Amino acid sequence: MTSVPKRWPGLSGPQEVVRRDRSFDVEALRADFPILRRQIHGKPLVYLDNAATAQKPQAVIDSVSRYYEQDNANVHRGVHYLSERATEEYEGARKTIQYFLNAADASEIIFVRGATEGINLVAQTYGRANVGRGDEVLISAMEHHSNIVPWQMLCEVKGAKLRVIPINDSGELIWEEFEKLLGSRTKMVAVTHVSNALGTVNPVRRIVEQAHRANVPVLVDGAQSVPHIEVDVQALDCDFFVFSGHKIYGPTGIGVLYGKSALLDAMPPYQGGGDMISSVTFEKTTYNKLPYKFEAGTPHIAGGIGLGCAIGYLNGVGIERVERHEHDLLAYATRAVGEIPGLLVIGTAAEKAGVLSFVMEEIHPHDIGTILDQQGIAIRTGHHCAQPVMQRFGIPATARASFALYNTREEVDALVSGLKKVREVFA
Ligand SMILES: Cc1ncc(COP(=O)(O)O)c(C=O)c1O
Image (tube, rainbow, N blue to C red):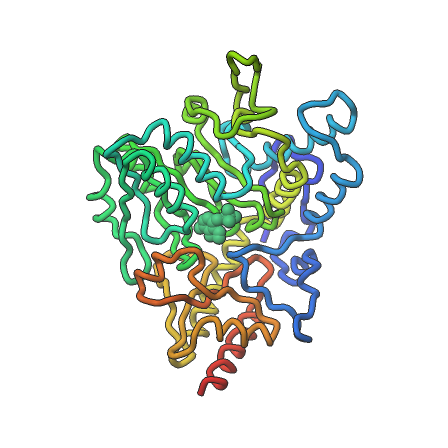
């Protein structure tokens, strides 16, 4: 393969993680992730819980410790050297994220704690200002709780109504129902790009087009898309986009809200405090410009720097290569588990990314997870913070294997033999 990573202007510092080896050598990539050398219960770790959180490459771990060891100071405040260094690195990370999402301007990138906080921010600022009694917020039946509850809370306060686009038996949105539900009362459409419980990739470009025809803004929950598929917020034309750092090889406690500047400018701030102001008197406060208006208080500086580095790392590997590799793994795993008697895959959409959810006849998913754990295999079991998805399929829980760039076909084989062992135990 000859493609090279996007050369992003201005990329320097910990974000500049360029891999010399331009082939997709999964073993070389695995060596970048120290935790993958661990043994669990005496077996090599097979980590297939990436939709919950991804592991971190050494470069990211180093960027965080280097900040604390060498550059620790507060940002945007001091005139001294360390404060300038910290600010440079933190703002450099914002630029990296701008290029990564192809946002029009770095000021459209707001640092938040994660996807959850990004959605709450939009619900509590844009939502409170624009959603009123009798209005509607439209979400889908495959949302994570973090893209349900904030809208529910808003609707409760405002006397608005939450409407839900249903999904079919494959776990795909029913388009005609979406068209029917989108109406003059709709004030916001909030949908996931990729479902964490089913793996479905939603046609967000088409959703945005349709919603914009009705003058309705769209928030896209990208928590499960950015690690797996290329995202261009200008091409999608979405109004808001959120994701979490820890699912894309970065630290926990940091994430991103992207918003179109015209919308962000018009929105009231979320939290009050330092950094988000331009001037304060007891009579009146004026707010800072974007993005700082939405970043009250000392931010998660190390997290921002680590996230910039994680995205630099992913860019160095090449998202299109990651997409191809994970697509191959998912197809391989889907075929392999399909041969296990009594196993049913939940979520069989034509377009999927990263996630393989399943149930096994007469075996509770928690038992599957526990037996696999004894073999060093980490998967997730439960409702995956998507209880309505479980209700839709009439099941209490699923077992879920989810993939990252460092997973291999051998690990899928280990999962399959582990599942055969589960069957033997319950035979
Ligand atoms: C689709 C989706 N949205 C939102 C979230 C929430 O992410 P966080 O807990 O990092 O805020 C998750 C986490 O699993 C998710 O999968």
